[in-house]
Image (cartoon, rainbow, N blue to C red; front, side, top):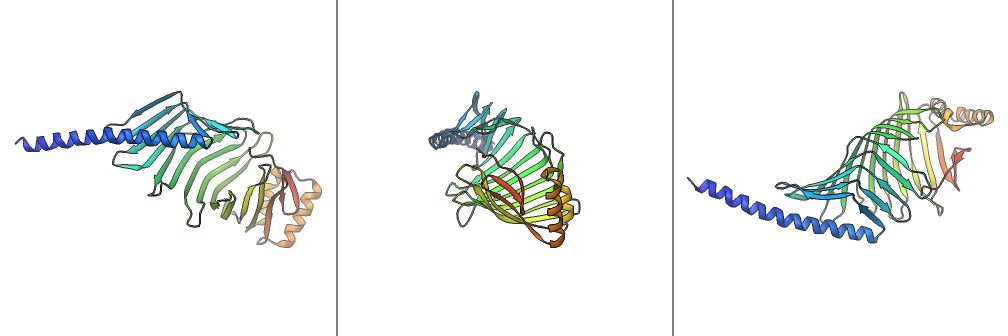
Length: 293
């Protein structure tokens, strides 16, 4: 009658020994990764740090985390929690409580309000990560809001990283400008090893207006966006009406662009071009582009 109890006690003791040994291994690997990233210019500091999770998890808690990318910018948030199952340590769940403040050397700090953001990171046998993340109820001061933002990434077979992004109810409203709201945005792209983003498809939907495009973008030697996205839509006139309040076109520009689009028809293609620090919609200059960092 004591045999089942003895087996349970032995198993509990063996699991406890395993957990404490594995916990020390996890702490060591975390510290090694932290030091490697710091050597590459990315540091993480915390007001408080704790480890917990016995008996089934490994949990690392970082209070008031500050991530600094040397010479480029930093991000500050309220609380970071990393969790891994003791029996599946190669999958890590990261939970981030907002608000989060992001700043770069060239742009003033931007505060992002959000509910708890969740990211699941899975490492394969070569320690290459796959990422799946959700950011609910995003509100970016001075820019707008997103009801739900989801992002996924995985190593690309050809090198680089495949990326999928989707957003619902995106409201773009910079200060002093009229709002622009779209229902859905989806993008499939590959971040190549040369740091250029190859956009396989990007689609935007606003009511009955649908727009899709493809192209490639990157950064020039002054860290400004450069590249070209070729777009097409089922309603070119509706798309122009939707964008007109944000384009700040003169009467002559609006008339010329409207005439050109009328000649091309609703199914025609149009290019969004970023070149030499200037953004163009077709042949029309829209605005200047500042360095990203």
